[in-house]
Length: 468
Image (cartoon, rainbow, N blue to C red; front, side, top):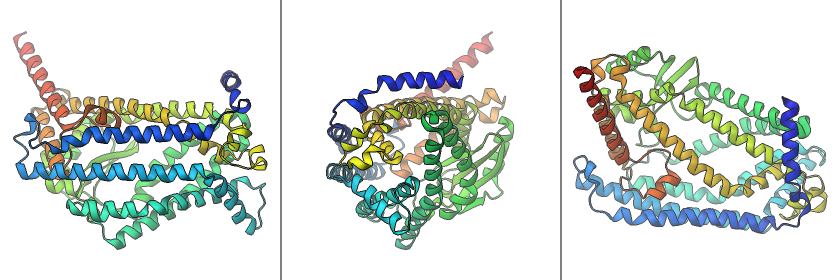
């Protein structure tokens, strides 16, 4: 099996041999691809922007938004769109300048100078790759830091969502950098080591490594990482806890812990989610959601989330991601063994003669920019389909559990979704193309119409059964 796989990968590489032989201006193509994607995203924002000037919500939502709340939602959407348009162009301008003026070649050389001062020569490629990554990270993230500050303390503050203090902002930033070093450095070192150890047969080994890393992160995230940023407390005894545990038990959901998270520490936005290994799951509910919704409505939101578990959506997405990763890794060797590929990005002949894995992989990902944008649209379409299935699951709980208490689950879920959108000032007028590109969830209007359809179909089926 492995021999067959490697023979097919070798055949693929032979078809991509032009990468190492043909004179191609790769820098031009990367610039064209990246600007093409950025300008397309700007076009989508321009398509969406006029909808923020509408004075009334869609007819299906007219009874749920008063004029003041709807106008606040429109103003929030308009401000976010303006911010996204400006920041998108600024970040692309920065990335384009870094690419055009040989910043990546400079960063590799800077990494080499750092390691040489520590007494390590160019033969220590992995160590130099870590230094290169640090230089690249700080050089690209620090210039955009003012944008994050503006978004948090001006944009979110203006619309009443920001709860982050300057001290908390700086603390989160430093914690994020520290985590990136503590987790990211060993991960990158191991990632590059697998490349060197496995040679040209790295694809299956690297996929196994990445999958193992994902599993490890699922295990350590709730116990080691999440507590650094938020406090997870056991959900207090009461109606919501009773409802949640009863629903999990009826569905045989392997609930291990039921948490309330202090999301209000940073923002007024609400959410709920689950995570964990197949035999041990954890449900997390934002304190803002508990405060803003009734227990039966929160139960409906959790019923939707458990629908994702029931239909194995996380597992399906994981499988799709593995196919995606395999495709990327299968194409990569042609670029790894192409000195002129690095020469196109201003790397010296000496460096390009033995292309550093981290550099070649980074530049290769830039080549894939338009393809990744298209894949993103496809992934959004799959995700939206999963959301429909999860909504339908919640509506069908009455039959699945033979419980009359669940008969109004669709209505409860609809009310909860409306509350979430109202409290989060989410946009209710959405351009179809903008939504297809950006949104992994159907719009609120689409979901409410679908919920009505699910319930109507269920009522019709019930009548037919009674007649029989």
